[in-house]
Length: 127
Image 1: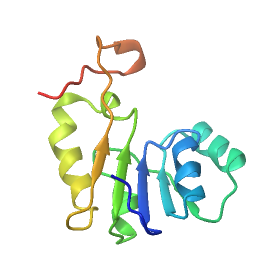
Image 2: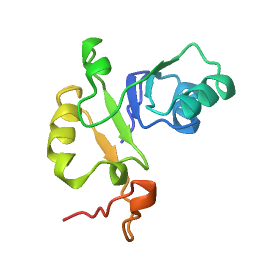
Image 3: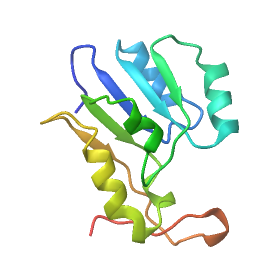
Image 4: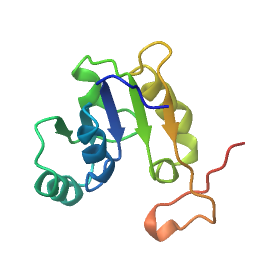
């Protein structure tokens, strides 16, 4: 699913930057979105790469990201969707998809298992 040529990639919910760093190592320019300040700061320290641009933003609306006016060749949401309340997922999906270039892939990993209210984790599935 990854573009073969160096591309502009969006990593929503980048956490400490593991995926963003790998994507940058492959030659891509990466915008890493992470709402948790501690995780974002850790990512910046762990992966000081000029090809990674860190943004403080969150789903469902991503207002800071939309203000940049960028369109991405590939978008990754890994270990994120379960943190979006089910009632906000349609809006979140619409906001994400408007950031993707025509024909570009969107990869979403899903967590299967029970909800965990104390950790703001909601059930998610393919259906």
